[in-house]
Image 1 (cartoon, rainbow, N blue to C red):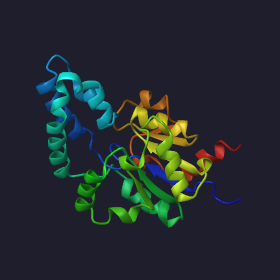
Image 2 (cartoon, helix red, strand yellow):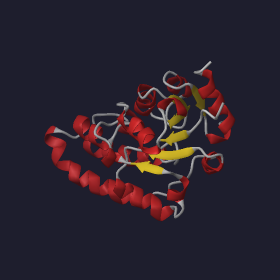
Image 3 (cartoon, rainbow, N blue to C red):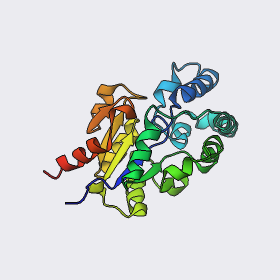
Image 4 (cartoon, helix red, strand yellow):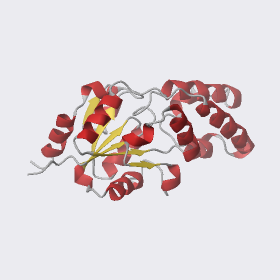
Length: 220
């Protein structure tokens, strides 16, 4: 029987890149300025898209501040280092050498991705497809983005493994009917484990063989 593991689908922040600490800094600053009555906005909004954050926390009298925050965020992201999660580069290169297709599936927009490409010249070479917010009608936790990624790569949902860290992202992968590896980079392992098939700290703890076994387990 051929290999079951045909595609690896990666969220970006907290999965490919260790960016959560930087976003905590950014949204902590916005929270102190615009929501002084609310403690730790940066913790509350983890895993939410910018649209979701705006709809819930910057509506009404604060709606006029969205443009300012967007400009600040664009500048902030333009200067982020985008450091890889430990083991990611080695892992993804090994998958590609084995013929596994790879894709980024992120709620980030193309402008942010341009900053990523400037920081990492060879980034696009690591993936067969990169899906951004502009490619999605419904954001995570809806399954649309992962289903679209599988379609673009020409693989079935049962041949995909999703790598996610946020609760909404984990729910999205499961809703798509895919096996999900949860990274405990943003949320505690016990919280991630409620929505993932396996939980790892980083990519040093996962391998091609482990993903193949994960898919095989659902066929047994």
